[in-house]
Amino acid sequence: MNKICGMLCALSVLLISNASGQTVERPGNVTEVTPTPPPSPGKLLLAIHYEALCPDSMYFIRRRLYDALNSYNWWPYTDLKLYPFGKAGFYNNTATGEMQVFCQHGEEECELNALHACIIETFDTQKAFKLIYCMLRSYSNQLDKCSSQLGLDVSKARECKASRKTADILAPYGKETLKLGISFVPSIVFENDFNPYEQSSIRYNFERYFCKEYLKKFKIKLPTCD
Image 1 (cartoon, rainbow, N blue to C red):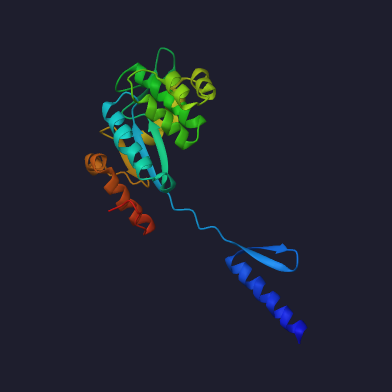
Image 2: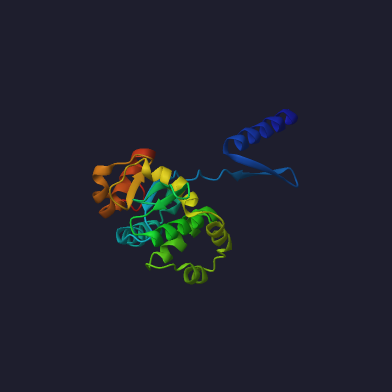
């Protein structure tokens, strides 16, 4: 009878551990159950199409997006994608037979857009965003100053920029931006659903739209959402 009771108890512990987490055997036939960690929060896909020398891009990223991600702690809930291209375009240089790129604010912006792209390619999203946020303080190249302030090694980003042509670096970003047919920069896209008619409202009421889109996708109201 005692053996049967012992077998039933062991079976109960096994069933409970399979339902709630992992079991760890301890000396003296004591079994501890390790709780299963809570699931990670869902992330809302957020794409920002911007330009390195665009005043409106600078304002939105530095004043609205940065504050929302950090002050409201929305990083765990955001899958951020940055596209440094904006209202640029490609053309075929008949003299050289090469594809080249033109930008709304001139050649310097093309070079800075490409540098931003190399930063995005060589750092994780949060580090890249911090570096770009810092660089958007100025209308000139602030890579040295900002990387020094943040303690980031930007040698790979430099190599990316120096070893490839600007048009080639920007090609994948231009592909995603051009298919939207944007008329204003920055343009903000939630979950690959571009709404051209509400861009102005989204830029100036970003937090409200983020909350609405998050609730729509995950059926969860974030703590910082009214």
